[in-house]
Structures are given as C-alpha cells and as structure tokens.
Length: 538
Image 1 (cartoon, rainbow, N blue to C red):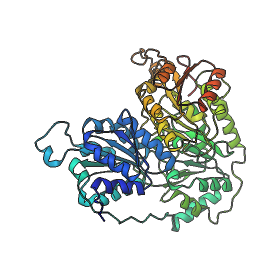
Image 2: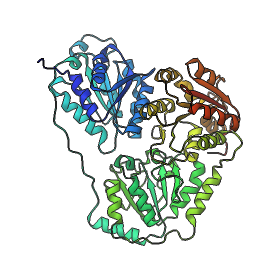
Image 3: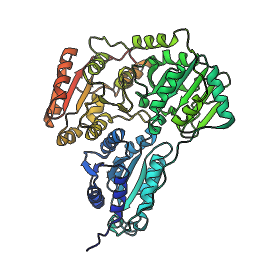
C-alpha cells in the first residue's frame, strides 16, 4: 500500500478544515497554486474573486455565518498588497482572517527582485501575528495562527508561504490546544459589583462585539430582563437583544441624531455596565461619556483598556456570559427606571428615525425592512446611508447586519453579501451600497453571476459622496471632489448576467424586492434619491 506523502500545504489546509473552514477566496498566481490545490483537496472550496480586497470581505461574510476563521489567498507582490485594506479592516473589526500569501523562496529572493517585497513587514502592523511557513513546522505554525486569530479579541494572522515549502514533504501534526474555559470575576471586586447592581435605580448596559465571540447573547438577555436594564449595542452587536424587545434601545456609533437621545440617557444612569464593549466602533462623542468618580461603571471585556475612550471603576478581563452570571448571582431584582424613561427614549428614537417617508433614503430602508423576511442577512457599505440604516434596520438576531464599523471602509457591502449568501444560501441576503461604493466593486457582479445565487444589491443613487458632501457644506467649503456622473446601475446588473431595476418610489421598490427574492440569479436595484437627501436624517 502506497503511503500518501503530505505536503506542507496539505498539513496547513487540513488543519484549517478541522477548524471549520469550508471556503477560501482570492485570486491565484503561480506562487499559490499548490496552496489552492491543497485547500480543495482538504475540502475547502476556493472561490475566484475579481480583487483580493473583495475576496477578503467575501471570506468575512462567510465567517459571520459559520463562525469559522475566514481565509484570504493572495499571490506574491501586487496580489498581497491588494489585500492590505481588508486585512486592516479585519484587525479593527476583530475578524479572524487567515491571510495566506505566496512568496518566492528566500534563497531565490537574494538575487531575484521581480515582484519581491517583504510581505511580513507590510502585514505586521495590521495583524495579530505573521509567520513564514516551514515544512518541518507547518502544523505548529498553523495551530499557532488559529489560536492567535481566534483567542482574546479576534483578528487577522498572516502566513507567508514560499513556493518550495508549499510542495515540500511534511509530517502530520496531531497536537491540539485545549479550548480555554470561560473566566468569571471573583473576590472583593465581584462583591463590590454586586452591591452596585443591588443598589442601582437607573442601570444601563452597553453591549459590544465580545458578546458574539463569547456566545453570551442569551445571558445578556436574561440579565437585562431579570434586572430591568436597558441595552444599547454597538452596530456590530445589533441583534444581541432582539431590537423589538422592550429593553433594547438599538445601536449606536456614528449617528449624531441618535446620540442626542442616547448620550443624555447614559449620563443619567447611576450604573453603567459595559459588556464586551469595544469602543473602536464609536464616534468621538462617546469619549469619556461618564465620570467613574461620580457614577458606578463596570467594564467586562476581552482585552485590557489601552484605548482610553472611557474608564471604569471596576474592570473585569473575563468572559462576558460568565461575568454577568456571577454578577447576577444572589442579587435580587428590583424596580428600575420607575419614571417611564425607557419607554420615553424608545419613542423618541422612533420619532427621530420615522419609517413613513414617502421616498428618500429612509423610505427605501423602511420599505426594504417591511418587505424582506425578519431573518434577512443585510450588509451595508460605509457612507451616509450606513448611519441611517444602522439606526433604522431592526435585527432579530446577532450577525444579521454586517458592516465595516471599526475601519469604516468603502466597498465592503457587496462582497460581504456574496460571502454570506455562499454560507447561507437558504436565507435572503441584501446588500446596501451608495453608488460610489458600488462602483468600487462592480466587477464582483461577475462573481455573483458565476455563483448563481439570488443575492439582492440595493444601490442608493444620488451621484455624490453624500456624507463627505454634507461635511463639506457644514464647513462652508466649496463643493469639490464629491460629485460624479450618473450611471445605469440596473443595466450593469443585467450586463453581468443578473437582473436589474431602477426605482423611484416605494411601490416600485416593493415590486422589485418581491421579484428579486424568487429570481434566478442576483438583482441590482437602483433606488434613485434626491441629492442632499440625508440632511437632518443622520
């Protein structure tokens, strides 16, 4: 019987498969052909994208559905450099992205310079770690990469794979790390925290992305209901508490209009509990909202506070679910917010973001939310429409609104939606882009066509970088560099083999959405709105 000889690339790929990875994305070059072959043989499907940056966002879209690490494959030089933005995004948005780049062998690079550059030096500042694969240590390096990417606050890890190493014989690797047990607070600080909770009359929770990694959404809900604590989430934590819940105050992060209501409410609290709250998603208005010398603040988080966006009286580096359970233990619930403040602020937020606009961006968002199923996975690009949609789009569950909220990079919504649809083909998936963001990644309509899914791409068409144009006007500056030509976005969809519709009212939008949900192939819906339509809305 012939014994199969594993290549170093096979050892890497098999461990990634074992970690739950089923999809990888990128654009091949000669330097990564063995890697792609190994991934496919291990059971990880490789999808060709049209640009490495989009490929990384597709990988992230899959991750948000299946919770496995995302995989981006990039070839030497320009291929790897095209992925820099999405890797930086993964670092700031806490995405466990495994970045596999091909490179020439070290000896070859001593005298061969074509496309040769130090990938690791480029990726080091924007990843949690970077490695060069070695055949004798392929299993160890892959195991380290997975552990670093997924433990603590998640983030990207880069592995540079020399051509000859990918093909070199390697031994199987059987050593596995033990999963870390959830850590809960103990001792005097826990007793103090319980006393604060027991005496609180106006407690509030600010919930962030660590809760998703800890899988503690149900614990958050149970705690909030038991102690009648209203919940504000960051945008990426939307849905941790269903947003139709009486205690959910929705998302916060970028909207000055929402902040006018939410910040005074937080300032009126006598206990603030930050639960997995990572302020990298927040605008400057959320700096030092409270003074821990005058209000009790408990911070439960996965990483030390080196950001200084806020401070706390008690800081627990702990699992969010285990910490809330420990905090709750032995503390009797009592009536809180007895003046009807929770209902009042929910009503105020609903009035600030009305759903009955005849048309315009709010009308588009409201109509889409009304027509599409409650479990729809939505993705949204950066821009004025994202601020509005992140406040208006109601999430019934976590990870059903995907966006770039740490780095706020443009061009993410389309590939995020393509990736999410690959991982959840049974779900309705809709992408929301501004016209400028859509143009950045229009070539990925070709990818969408090849995949054959009926993903819906909604484009807000106003021929302007609306958010930047608004800031330009607010500073009384001349209109420069923010406007561009109009294009037939529905025709772009059709040209790539999909469906397309241009809509200018809610009735036509409803018809287009209804048709898109049962269409063969993807649909681009161009929603034409007035210029400056976001004034007073965000």
